[in-house]
Image (tube, rainbow, N blue to C red):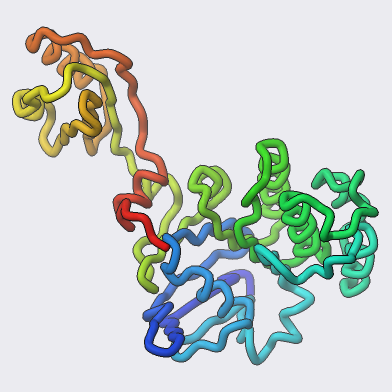
Amino acid sequence: MGDTPAVEITGLVKSYGRTTAVAGLSMRAVRGEVTAVLGPNGAGKTTTIEACEGYRRPDAGTVRVLGLDPVKDARKLRPRVGVMLQSGGIPTAARPADYLKVMARFYAHPVDPAVLLDRLGLAESARTPFRRLSGGQQQRLALAAAIIGRPELVFLDEPTAGLDPQARLATWELVAGLRASGATVILTTHYLEEAERLADQVVIVDHGTLVTQGTPAELTGSQGQLRFRAEPGLDTSGLVVALPPASVVKESPAGAYLVELPAGIDPQVVATVTAWCAEQGVLAKNLRIESRTLEDVFLELTGRELRS
């Protein structure tokens, strides 16, 4: 049982009319880890998560959640799985304290509602009707409702959307606490910093298929970046020749130069760049060394164009 993935998807296909939202996607999430599912708008991630939650029946392929079919075994899974929806689901007149008390009654060993209210900064709004809560407060109440039953597996859909920095940090700490307690978390987010910080595994989907999956370190790799500013329009061909093989030098935007090396940046590379700048009679300003981020990888794999 412990070796069984928390979520295992094989060849998932789901269409709406002539539109194929998911086209043969396969992925898995390991128990006790945080898995972030990322993708541009329309990539198929929401449909995939809804299939895991039992809200969508696959047209083809299989979905297993804690070893069970989320549609056929919905009643067995309900006490073991927490679901946070991005919007809706909570009555507009419900007050946080009363709502969480009602939710707690459905579980054998719930978290104390007062503890959750305090931890998520909702104690002072405990008697305020849901419709009068701010968007961030509504978001935090939805999170509290998803985890009050101490679920083995919890799905969090954009858990920090619209939150201020303090509330976002509190949510991150809560997710880390869930993992520490042995729970599995499936997270969708547009905040790539959030995924890089929280996730053990990252799954990137696009056009309804799996693009890549791995740890943040595996996806970002060891590739190093050196950035500097100088006079626009410099001919960098000589710098490329002076650097180690497979090095790349780009200028974008004008006057902003990027040097990338698969093996990373070392002192010799820095010396080569500064010496080349000296030969050109230019001063390398704002020179800094960086590592690739998850955002860099995401944009490389899914493109930079806007999507509706």
